[in-house]
Image (cartoon, rainbow, N blue to C red; front, side, top):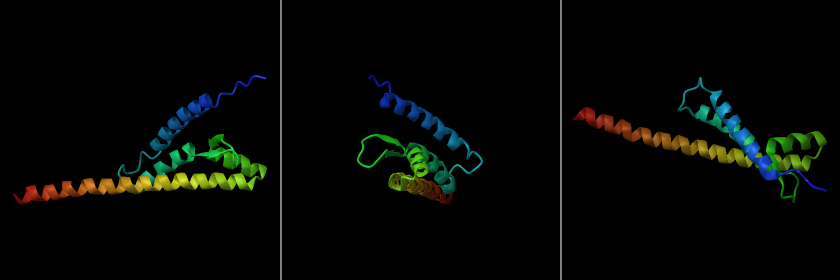
Length: 124
């Protein structure tokens, strides 16, 4: 029997939809200061939620978005799969937090020389 399900096409459509969702998620925080750490953290949560994949079951090679796997496995009472999805989610959250911290350090490093140069020009 033929199977019309193409996982590559499904993941492609999901990726496009998730990227649009991430753009909308970022736009929700328009009222916050652009260079704020809290805004960066909140903006990071959207992509972590939408783009973290997890295996459908232990030992399988098929992946799905972690929030869907966690929701449906929790409804079905499959605690092992729910825990696996949450572990993958936490891994994505750690990567996102590292990204926010690196972004904060880079932002601080670019501000310091600019402030030092302004002081040198004022003294001259």
